[in-house]
Length: 311
Image 1 (cartoon, one colour):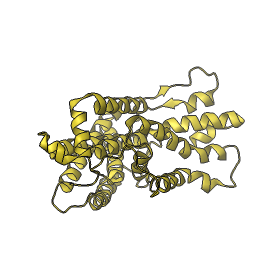
Image 2: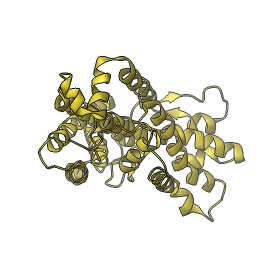
Image 3: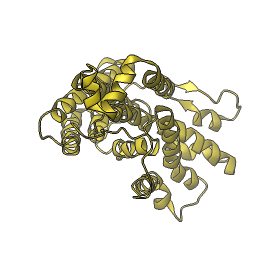
Image 4: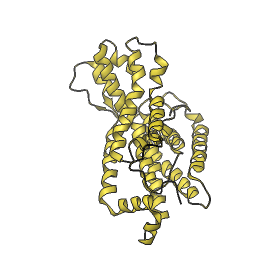
């Protein structure tokens, strides 16, 4: 395992390096899916189908990279597939009497099924991978250098988070998204096409989530398999609530979840195996804790769009 080899021989310092590197690596799917869901929910809609979009993006990126030899074409293809799935979800949820949550569950099944069906022929050793950025060049220790080789998608995700924050705060389109999510009737009175705004936001959110899937197959773990997502698409939806619908907070929360994901393998590398399964379940336990804390009747959900989930 990568984290095991990174931290071996470095003791507690090695665990810290492994967790830091694991947080940077593991945060990327959470980052892109949470940003996509944040954009979607800011417009007043919910897309629980991000898990299906994530899987379809992972499979598409791997397949295109394998067939063309270009991992960047794989990332672009994943984004296009995410746009299409987002468009399908947007169309479904704009139909009369269609519930957002039910449509999202249907999209999980649909997206996952498509990915599993078309991905059967691509269960191969490895497709061409994305180039790495070496953040460990300051160290002469090979283990540190290995742990801090990071996918360029990490920096793209950071840029996307700050860009979305700027869009929401400083642009006309961002104001229209927030208006559609907070009070669609008032937005319509001002001449804003709420359905169009939501359609575009959901499609863009799907594209972001699919790029997060591309990371899974084009960097870490770098293969395609049906269980590759591990529920990260669903956990990232909870992460948006934890981040209070703020793109910049989504970035920080993604790093927290990525670090939790790296905790188990890092401690195992020191021979701490007694609570192996509990440590490996850290992201799921963290998700549960977030949901319990935010769903308390005595707590208000600061930042939640006022019309979230309504027509």
